[in-house]
Amino acid sequence: MAKVLVVGGGGREHAIVHALSKSSKVSEIYAAPGNAGIAKLAMCVHIKDTDVEELVAFAKAETIDLVIVGPEASLACGITDALIKENILVFGPTKAAAQIESSKIFAKDIMLKYNIPTGRYTVFNQFEEANSFVQISPLPTVIKYDGLAAGKGVVVATTYTEAEAALKDMLLNDKFGHGRVIIEEYLQGPEFSFMCFVHNETVIPLEMAQDHKRAFDGDLGPNTGGMGAYSPLPFITQEDYDFALNEIMIPTAKAMVKEGVPFTGVLYGGLIKTKKGIRVIEFNCRFGDPETEVVLPRLKSDLYDVILAILNGETPTLEWDKEYSLGIVLASKGYPNHYEKGFVIENADTEEFYHMGTAIDDKGNLITNGGRVLFAVAKAETLEKANQKANELVNQVKCDALYHRSDIGAKAYKK
Ligand code: AMP
Ligand code: GLY
Image 1 (spheres, protein in one colour):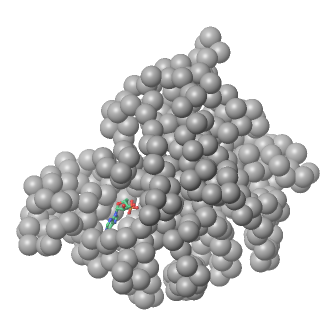
Image 2 (cartoon, rainbow, N blue to C red):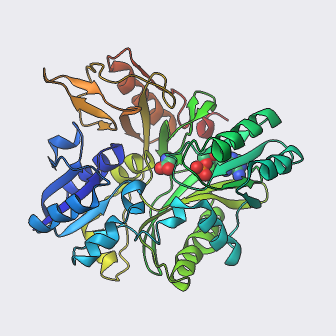
């Protein structure tokens, strides 16, 4: 029987821990740092998800058999490299391979070199130059910071004033740190997330999901880390699927091997179905959040078995529940900008809620402890029913400090 350590403490990690808790091969699950929901299924350890030294020391001391890493920040600071050095089995990319997410320019360079379809782009490091370029570009235009910015480093500018302000933030005020920017062609169409388990050239696709990035109903408001998701996707044809797998995901895994940065872990393609075909918006180097919370509940295969087989160079077949799975984020009012924490939450103490940012106060109450707080998941035979069920769950929660979207998946069933 295996001991598994899951690094991270959000809804994604709650879903991973939940899937592992159903495995017949796993005897103990640890989560660092975990959260109030995870604590019901795993032993939570008070170590920050970026404290590589402490995490490795813990894994060694507890003779952990497998480490699964959730957050990009942990991967970008080299947790995989440090674990490999100690001969501890880990499912997640090295720091070098994690650049596929941590550096948008690294990702774009690979796509350009290996003919992987993506939007046209130009790189800048000077404000004046970037601003002159943008002022003669067609609108909308897309401005991206070349580094990790928790999903907030992308501005789709619809006016030149907005574009200039974004460039000022990124290149003059170093809002996300000192770095470069990409100015990219605006792409239009439904976006979707294609996560694949990858080990070198082996690519095992998971079922696709769609995230909803904007804060409010009707895809309005600012971009967030994601306000809801569903899986599978009715608007993806077999042809789309084959193209995404054979022309994007497999070639990218192969390209990384050729470039000397082989990838192990979850390669996440943030893709868009434009009129001219499917294009890459971004790659992530880990499980998506909240996509994981709707995809893993549909996985019938044993997650631990599957990951172990992939790490051993095998190509396991994944089995999926055919039902729709749909989830809604309950976020703190003010998110993705300023918000307060510490509000008591009632009626969310069931299995249908994954915890994204929660804690327990000294009186034993469940309280808000992050921007995205809870994720309510429902399954049904139609997308519309799944949406209704998830909304019912969300509406039963008592907490005035939270808001949510009610239209997750609606574009796919309201024709
Ligand atoms: P990213 O962090 O690269 O996923 O970007 C966040 C969001 O910005 C995406 O999910 C899209 O909604 C939007 N976005 C990024 N790049 C583009 C693009 N080239 N065209 C249109 N929208 C984009
Ligand atoms: N849901 C978007 C992400 O995980 O980056």
